[in-house]
Length: 311
Image (cartoon, rainbow, N blue to C red; front, side):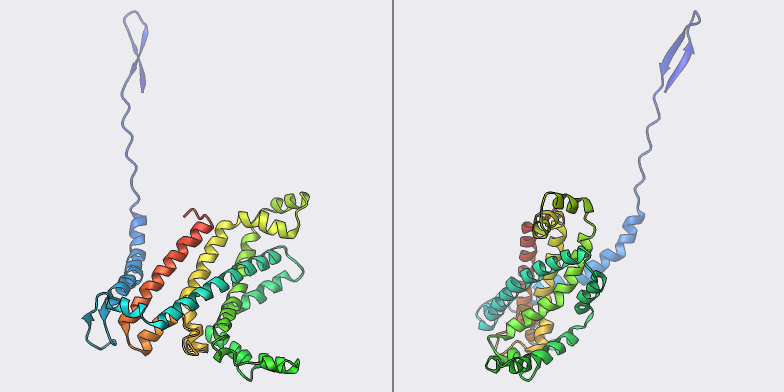
């Protein structure tokens, strides 16, 4: 602050006085307090079970009410020597490699078509969303009715004079896993397409108009113009579908094939359920669970790198 004072002879002299120090900003404590319940919930129901998986994997626990003993790495050796586990690894890898690209690419193309607002696009959005509204047991019943030996698919083949191609699709070692993959794609592609359509609808119209002026067709505009704009969103949706396919396949296997015939349709997530609740071998089950967790983590990091996510 500057003050004026009178000097001898009537002249004014400017003097500077030190200004008061600014008050330090007050920290907002309310946000931290409000976050405490969510943090406690996360620690108890997310971090707690994750730690429990690694602990149980080191135990010999033949049932919930049975005595527990320390097994160390014995469960790991047992799992790696089990041919059923290797079949589950192979089936899970095939499921992810086939279902995930088909679902994401097909859903993106459907979403792009819907985002162009063709005639009846509002009705099409509802139709695509229907599989996401149907419960998993209902979906399994529909697929069983279609693919059972006397089901609709074999009946259609007979009507078309191709009765030699009929098969017990869900009970054949060569087709059981393929049927589960078809169910995964059918149940996920419509819901994902609606998500893509909603995101593509927020892309500025000027981008598409500029592409049309440059002579770009729909195929080029879809992959060269719009896809780079929503790359981050595609990465997020791919992560979610990867996790759903990896960890959620157990319910479809349980309802349709029970992992058979033999172990031809056994996946890692179903093996966790089977060993824990049917074979009552909790140590083996959670050892597979640890492996499943590591596969999920590696898959997320790979998808993040492929789509160049910045988070």
